[in-house]
Amino acid sequence: MLINTNLDDSLAEKIDYLLKTTQLTLSDILKNSVNLYYEITRLSPADRLKAFEEAGFIGCGEGDAHLSVNYKNDLRELMEQKYGHG
Image (cartoon, rainbow, N blue to C red):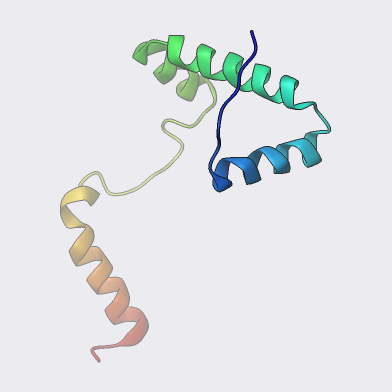
């Protein structure tokens, strides 16, 4: 399949970067990109969750179980400790 497309400057810069850093051809970069995107989109939400769990990403942090509720107060206290009441 022959592909002809126009890319904005941002995408062109990204492709130039990939060409320089990977030493791959444009064709190989596009093939790899399509294959990766294809694999990602085929994963079900459960498979995505499993991949994060297996990578050790989920459950790797610790913190207040109510952070989403208390974050403003926590931030205010930290700022007061660091900078005082000014």
